[in-house]
Length: 316
Image (cartoon, rainbow, N blue to C red; front, side, top):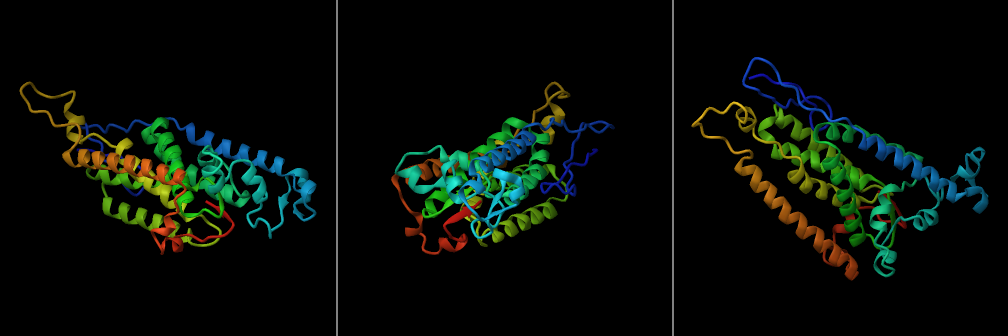
């Protein structure tokens, strides 16, 4: 049995995913060319530049930062500490706003908010993390599965944010970013037997997620978007990032006549996949129903507001 090194779920390269071919040569993992994540990063940058053009701080305010940038200059630190546009501009261009989604039926905001950022600092932090995590996942699993996880988990984060934060606006790609983190965790769990150093990888990934969720309780971050995106990505990872068993991969071309073929997926993998499918569908549909009914989940969970800092503007 031979093995090839593969990056660990945190991208640190400490975990090996074993690849066996039954002979003396190592069979390298198939690698996809990553093009979706670079497009996502580029699209977010282009959208931010467009938002700053529309914001036109010098025309609407006398207190602007970096005035040499003209209409691309930033709002004052008092209005926006993240070096970006005003809250009113973000709201006009598609930020998450519960009242407009529920009462004015502007459901498209659940998606558009994922492409808006509160400022340059917000944009740089999010895009660096998306690139760091997304490249590895896209190279291993392809653009279709990673793109699905990115968009759907971001949508899940928007839903949960609206169910708890109804007096604030929210923007940012962090919900989709946390979806990728959640998918990495479920991918490690459902393909547990294919990894070496799995315990170390699991602990490191849990620490990374825990630290980021802890930072989400600080102002002015929308932690409910983080949690919703993470849960969505975690469940989708069980469905989309499952690997066949090694024995099935080894024997599908070299199975001797009369031999009993191993199943493609183990019973544990199938159980996790089915359970995740049921929980995801129930949670997604329930969330949408509660949202458009105008429910506020803070009524049922008196302590949940402590999970996220609540102010007028939230940057996810």
